[in-house]
Amino acid sequence: MNKIFIILFCILYNLLIGSCLSIAEETKIKIGLLVPLTGNNAEIGKQIIKSTRLALKDINSDKLEIFPKDTQSDPNQTLRSAIELNNLGIKIVIGPVFYENLIYLNELKEITFLSFTNKTLDLPKNVISTGINSTSQLNTIKKFIDQNEIERSIFLIPNLDYDLEVKEGIKKSKIKTLKQYFYNIEPTKLTKQIEKITNYEIRKQNLIDEITRLENSNDPNKEVKIKNLEKKYTIGNVNFDSVIIADFDESLKSVITSLLYTDVSPKNKYFITFNQWFDESLLSETASQPIYYPSINKKNLEDFEKKFIDQFKQNPNHISLLSYDLVGLIYYLSLKNDITKINKAFDAKNSFKGKIGVFDIEENKINHQLNFYKIENGLVEEIF
Image (tube, rainbow, N blue to C red; front, side, top):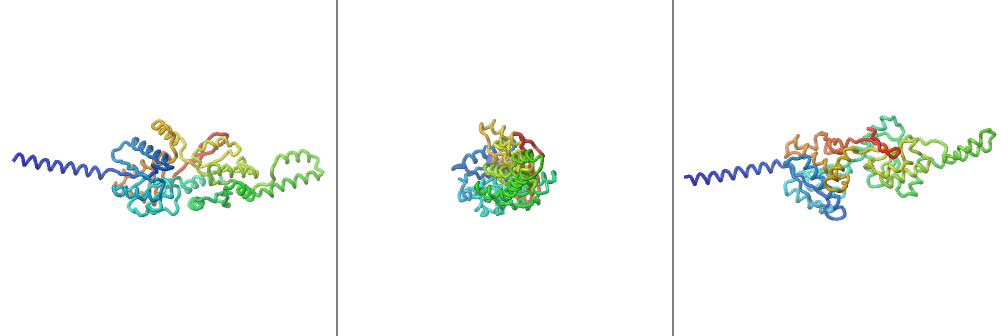
């Protein structure tokens, strides 16, 4: 009899333990991670994994579990890895990194992908763009324009693969522009286009005509006036008070150089650009200053960089900061929603404060509330 009791007890005990383990497994938040771990972009993927490890350490919860898979920066491999995550029962995935790797992911409708791309057009319905998109940036630029009562802004947009994103951002942000120009990034063609936009030849001719008029006049002060005019490049103003340049890096510098060449100065007109991630090379471009742009919170970025360097002895890329926040975002949503329905939380209106700043989540989209900065005299100043 005692043997029977012991056997029954063991069976019940094992069933109970198995049940508890099963419940514990169900309450786990399994997060897939689709990043390049091999190939040319492997370092990006490895840094993202390190960043998610930092997030897990800071959150300090045993509810979260990360499952990394390699995309090889290839859409076919991305799909294969996503299928593996699906087979593990994972319903929410951070990644992929690149827009080009999204094209087959609509085949896995039961998974929500939080991609690092900042492109928002033509995405699969189960993909959420989490990068700092044009609408987020233009919403912030609009706030600055409204605060400073800037009334005549022109837009300079390069003929690149994100020009439609910029047009969509202009529409959604309801920012008022005097005119939009699309330019060729090839330097010679760019300069010709900027000359036309700024009426450079007419203003240059105005200067020549005025000097000639004074030379042939009886004005007693003509020598002084001519000497002052010879210090100028043009006469006459342009019809805008700010120029918004949707460009980055060396291409941005080429646009600014062309504007300076055509005698349009940031000392007289607002030069506003897109997020430059605090590009330090802009600090030494004193002729281009002041220059204004939206970006993430600078102090938060510096704090994260210090933490990352202390932990891993290397500088993080910008996507690393975003991946850190996405882990926190998923955990935050899991506290407010049924774990099994966490995917649906992205349909509802939510706000989440991370290292980047505030995420606004609504209708399967994420926008960022950004700060606004000015570079002047080689220093970065926060405007708001």
